[in-house]
Image (tube, rainbow over all chains, first blue to last red; front, side):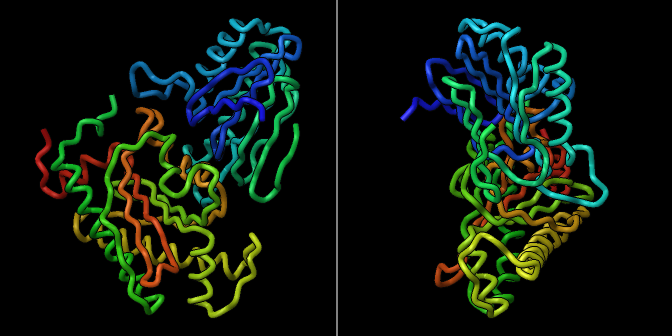
Length: 162
Length: 206
């Protein structure tokens, strides 16, 4: 059994040496993962909201917002010997769990999280290698730092490999 | 700073009473639906870290049946009615008198029946709360999902997301007489709604 590192909601972590990163129950949240296949360093963030501009708290948790989580994740990975130029990204989640007529903005948060992650990755010229986003179901994901394979588990669709 | 961090014991007790009245009415409605006695637990009111909320219904990956409604009006918020799958199936077979297979799939009829149950229960919860507080609280059309608890509940935490990493939750569980059906109500008022609820109930604000 490989060493598993749990990433909570609004949390991020990194892994190397074959450790596996895991986060459970992604709904509208996005699991943003980065991998450097040469250094074999992996990173994962469980992002809840797109932009820290909407934060109404001081000293907020950087892992919660896409725009602050990505730089922080990259920074941690660089310390383990990864390089931005070699990183590729895979993202999952950003579902719309419930459908309503007359959608409020907060209710479309999933798609907005996904769009923001993509824009931010573009800013670092990090290639998006794969994604499993949108739709209306929850996902649990696992990223293996030995090979960069992202496993996605859902109730309706079983296990999928990216 | 999350303003709800600083609620006094008295205010927390007031919110417990809110849960008591709402869920009490909903339990009565369920009891009428099933024509069986339904017991209600003591409500819990707590500031719960996002990460731990799903633990209350069996963990983030636990598959649950959830009816979600957005509460609109004077004191907006999010409401969930959550039951485990076995309970959902028993509820359906009690109500519709049809035997259900054990698969994960639900027919359109079953889906709509569960939705309607959620609607009735949430409606009775909210209307008693609205009577009690004299605030307008109207539920949106209910939306049903069968999925991981973490994915479902995180949806109700977004309003708290910009203020901190935990949410104030009014939770009440209930149990049908022979423990065949167990369910949970989660009311997560928006952070701004608490002062309105307190004001409406004459709780002094410091």
